[in-house]
Length: 83
Image (cartoon, rainbow, N blue to C red):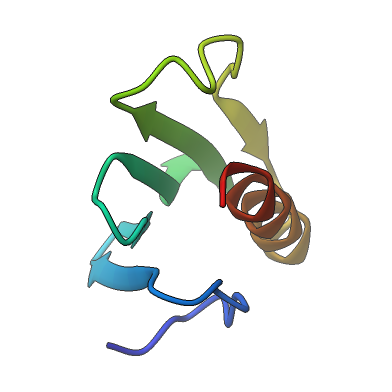
């Protein structure tokens, strides 16, 4: 499936897209990193989310960005760290 953020995924990772959310799944499906878009007022915000079935990223706090390219870069960094 096409990735609107054009993130360079590690081997085995895949992407699913919904109208307001793009999710990146690890090969074993135990890690999902997502970029969710939401309108707040007149601004579009991008929220980075991490769902890990392991304790790997317990300290990760969802983060909101107003710039699409920054959100994509942060999601790619998190994916690399979790690979």
